[in-house]
Image (cartoon, rainbow, N blue to C red; front, top):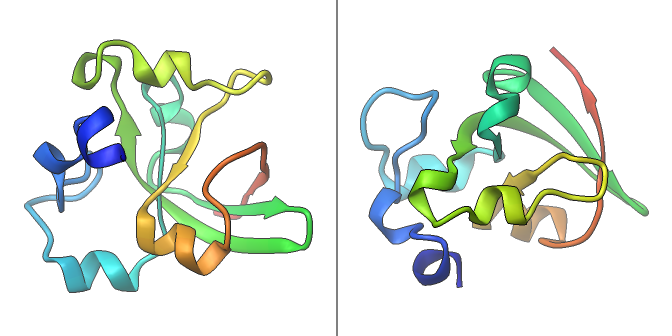
Length: 108
């Protein structure tokens, strides 16, 4: 869905906070998250501990969600608290969820 609806295929393997295009096996090994573009300075390059119910995972914020890539989808997908934490598909599989509200804490 993200590939088509949110223009993810165009940017596959490319992350705002990482130089160059990364191969699928590199992406698959990492726990990658993106934040809304307005939060990049605050969270970019940092590790976040995400929690949703009994699920928990530590992710690296390596990307940002830019409204210019998808006709405003990032702002439209902000949670009620004003934040967007978008996790990459392999990270989502390890976490066990890809939607809903998560609590998060900066780890470093």
